[in-house]
Amino acid sequence: MEQYGGFWRRVGAYLIDIILLGIISSILGSVFGIGTTTTELGDMSAAYSYSADDAGSGALSLLLGIAYFAGLESSSMQATLGKKLLGMVVTDLDGNRISFLRALGRYFAKILSAVILFIGYIMVGLTERKQGLHDMIAGTLVHVGHPMGNKAATFE
Image 1 (cartoon, helix red, strand yellow):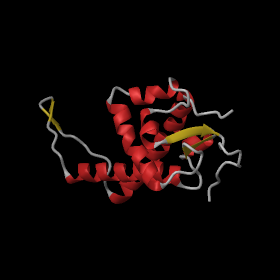
Image 2 (cartoon, one colour):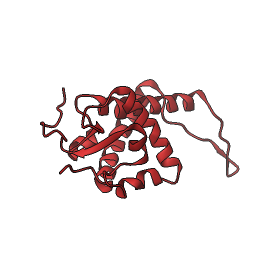
Image 3 (cartoon, helix red, strand yellow):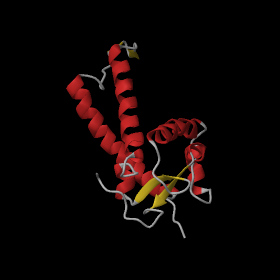
């Protein structure tokens, strides 16, 4: 019987991923001079204006997220580092490796999972194959181990 990555295991993997991305983002932000902003306070009120640093930081976050999540989940590893550490892989509905475009669609579908009060994520704990809304939209599954019985993907 196939075992799917459940809600709490996936939350744990995501926390690992976010910590790693935060470290990477901080390093890249300091190298390129973006990613951190300061707000000047005057008379106890914050005056905030949108700046090129904000755009650079947003672009850096978006590109890092795409490279990390979509890139790794469509790679031969089939998982982010967090998922890999917790023994999970992302596949299509037939248990095959997903393409970068499918992984990219899954990445952006997570926005919808979050916007609707995180119900799309909560669905992982409620559905038979532990699919979130983003998994259903992208036609993906998160397996514990490899669904075809093969050795888990490696860091190739």
